[in-house]
Every structure is written in structure tokens, then in C-alpha cells.
Image 1 (tube, rainbow, N blue to C red):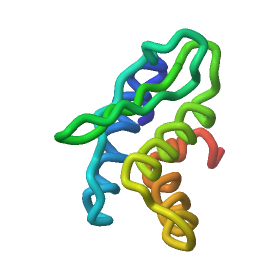
Image 2: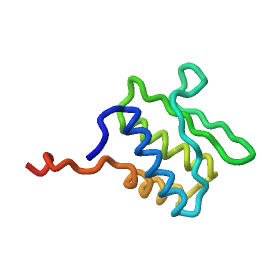
Image 3: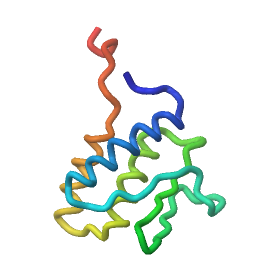
Image 4: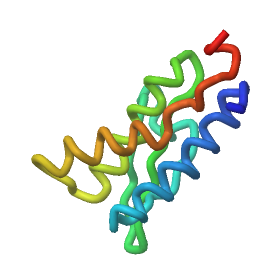
Length: 105
């Protein structure tokens, strides 16, 4: 069952996306919210030991937040070309909300 709070959904998606990134051989950035830069939907800070992807949750759909998280992983790892397309699809699938049992009814 998918959490209903935006913060809990964000945390659950971050865990699943981090696992998918590591499984693909990529570094998993840290995730936080909100970005320090006022008005930004997503920011990336690079550090010697990795990166932090910050995403704005308030006033945005989960699809927008999830898309920013996925793009943050790809940008932080410098993924380009065909690999970017393939990994974007795999990462979106990894963090897609689980189907609800009510959806089948």
C-alpha cells in the first residue's frame, strides 16, 4: 500500500530509486526537500563524496516529483544517450505507485 503523505511517498520513492540506481551500477544521490534555492523545483549539489538532489514537494503532483527525482539521479551520474532513455524508463517503473487493490474493482 502506497503512503498518502507527500513526505512519506517521497521517502519511499527515494528508497526504491536509490536501490534501482545501485542495481544499475550508478551512485545513488541523497534526496531532500525542499531545495535551498527559493522557487526551484529541483536542484543538485555535488560534493566530493556524492550528490544531493533536492526536490520541491509542496504544490506538485507525485508524477512531477518522481520525474525530478529520476532526472536528478541521471544528471548526478552523467548518464547520456541511449542509456539515459533506458534507465529513465526503468527508474520510473521502480518508483511507480503500487497498484491499488481498489483499482481492480
